[in-house]
Length: 240
Image (cartoon, rainbow, N blue to C red; front, side):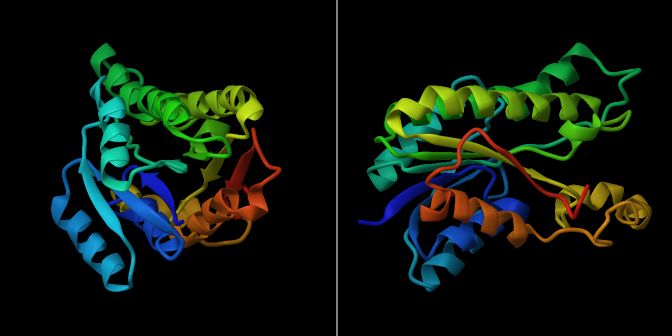
């Protein structure tokens, strides 16, 4: 029987690369928030190659969305074996000197609260031996910039919860790890495009990463190769 994976933020960037990497081996629940056209196009592409996919819409910044999303996955696929906690954004790009409490809360709701409650719901839904892969960011290592400090703090929380969830999951063989992407060539970085050439110069390998390079590591962690790996934060950063 094919395993089932729920991918949050699957309509583009790293999320779409995750979907393409997992489709040959998994039935997929593809979450999106607002870009239905991109999600539908991805579903058609994957189903054209023989995959089985379901589209699930949710605004993960809302408190009830994680539980509803996991229920939707179970209805669509009948099971949940792997959760790929990928959805996130540096919404607003507010400077920390002028950031409002509402902007702080908005970022933490999407980037830290939602992954935690999705993981909690996945724990309840998964059989023993499930896998959770949280997508963090190199911002958690460096602390972010003046306009992404809140995003960096949220991703640091994701890494901390990864360690705690891994300990809680060990008795049931539920393995929990995080991937820390560096600068990856996705639309996420479009707003920083004018500074990208200077940023890339700081990467030891001298280039931005590709979404599929993150996805390949996630697939490894979800498969037989990751059977004795839990509680780890693994960088895909080009050496940073």
